[in-house]
Image (cartoon, rainbow, N blue to C red; front, side):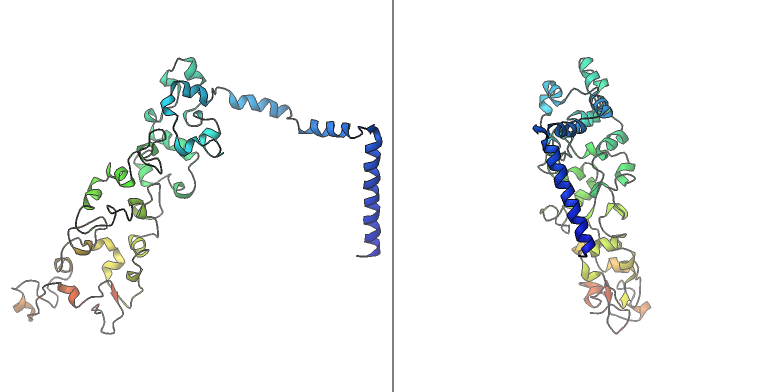
Length: 324
């Protein structure tokens, strides 16, 4: 520290000390009272603040008035946590979602004077919910497949009478909610080859995000079906020296991800599934093709994958035969 800087700080400290002593002795033992009064006056709401506060409450009657008649709606789950400033109950209570209730009360309970999601247009219901739920998994709701088909938030969730312990669903679990529309997909889960949904090891939402996605069919990861499947089945991802074209086109070319009566959830049994593309190619498809092809190496048992085991892709030096 230079000498000039030292003298500057010393003079500043002496000035502040002298000013403090002068203010304290200006009015005897209560010399700081005027200062405190001035500071308190500055902290009081100004004219704009005083006018804005009543305007924000105009038309609202409070949650206690609502529950005086609708006592069966007192249970709101996470929405009713007053200690959480993000919840509706911590703001305007019931009227955060249902709108101001003064007209409804003055009209002796006229249902036309209050917002009821059961009687609102789907777009209005979604707009009400997404006013808060607009981040994370809900960020892509606008423009999603469900939103485009007028599926509302209240079709899957219930604020006042949920049937599940989590996510406030209208059914006891995710599978039950999805089954209300996607019955063909839920029915496949009862087949011999299926995803472990009915065993409770995964849910529909493990692969799909019902609130919106950048992938097809509301898939959670990647930008294609193959990338979503490869997020778990990494050994099928590649890259391979010899790639099987159906693997590039998508896993659903050969597999049904929701369930199948065939092994490995194949859409049809082997060798038929291979012969959909490879018809009479080096191997006879039936007992009548041996003469035409010139070989008797008929396919049977596990068929094609008995030899072509690396069917998703191969790095075998023999070439494009997907051998082990």
